[in-house]
Image 1: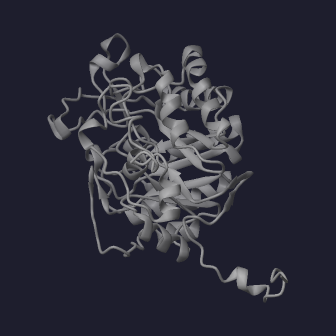
Image 2: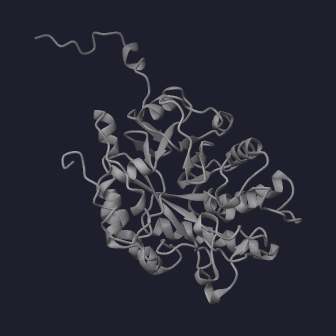
Length: 378
């Protein structure tokens, strides 16, 4: 039987539309698909120390050539604001992360660690010696918001800013020591970096407040320090200019997002990870099945390296976004949380497990964490 290979027109391969399952090269990493595990707080790291069940959870979701972004991980003892979230500022943290990273690498996955300082999204109980949480401002979050009673923050003094920048730098170095392939700087969701970025929170009158350029200075100093420490090819950042989470709101999110996208090019970092405007707080705007937003397009065009979009995507919207060149990669949160084999299910167009919101943040090492079934088990 004669083979037909090589007889068809060469262009036939090139006309296959790009999709979530198309390979992609991000810096030195060869991805086999474009489905990214979004960073998801899971509250299973007891006393801020990553646990062995984390290795099960992340390796379940690892695929050869798949990018996973680990949950928001505190850069220092002042960075914390939620129970049982992991840290990366001590030797104990580094050692505890190592087997988790190894488990992902054994399956051929690429693993980044998201590093965070929560700023004013904290209480005296989470702070060393019961001190006030730090922020760009001394304005607190409205009591009772999202069911939280947060403590009034203390405005970070200008001479303290380099110390916080250094905490991010050291955290990045620790992440690499733990074996991670890189770090994602958390500049989203109302936490410290975003408290500096957004004009409804940042009321400073020094060079870290006022103009757009000044408000972005803190974020860019962190990016520069981290890139200098571990190499720009190992650094990403996540931004949410349109979010109102924890009352971190900007009067002109389009301008903020575009300014940051352009400013980040100077540092040649690996990727920019942006949250769609349709995600407001914990609510997701669900439009028509195949509709994709276009609000991030100016930022996507301005940023010169890999662009990741996140927020309310499903299989069809993700394929459309990739096919339309709206993004290079799509990050999935709740769907990936509930479907450890999400890339395979998308490849087969198989039905998905439903996620259980009530078990997202419980401390159980199994329930709602590692017990979602794979396709063969469902």
